[in-house]
Image (cartoon, rainbow, N blue to C red):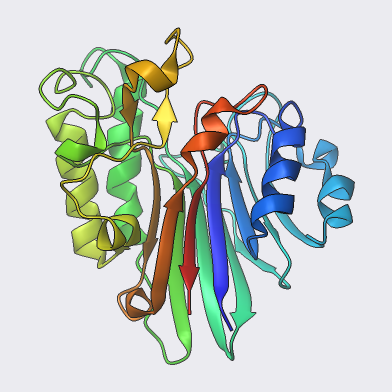
Length: 266
């Protein structure tokens, strides 16, 4: 049977619940991974998700900042809520589910943004981001029999030249600096993850998942970046049938500055 997963930095799940409900009603992914939920676990709007058939919910949240959540129509088991860089700030959630007779391990990540100054010597937020990516080398895909691994989330780095509106103009802008892009790609390659979005969409084709709130007309200026990713273990990659970046969601009522990214298998 086909399997559909989506990832979305929602920038406050309670504030933007109406557009999350719209997305689930119209696109019906089996699993939705949210980042930047900005919501303590006991205040997560579980009833609204269950009303739409997403009865299985795993949460790793905190008040006002960060936070990740995985909601599913398929039974979920929470496996791990990992902390990175010695900081407990709700940026990771690992769940397990049974799909088509096999297990899928699903990592949901929200990587630190890194602040504005791309110099780790004077900007501790940027240092934290680089250290976080380095620690992600410990998160490797499982390739056991009947087990596949997916990693999704807002990784806050646009690694390829076509992942930003202007490669040259953003080389010194946090999210596309060489130290970030090389660090992310080195980690991905070292661990053996497959970038499913770029497996399906040619790497030279411009593709964005985020547009700043600062733009008067985000669609006209189109100064975007691909910050949201879906990766998998190599054995699962051949089953990928479709990828969609839901650009239109950036124009929905009270939108997030990110849009959903969807991958379908089978």
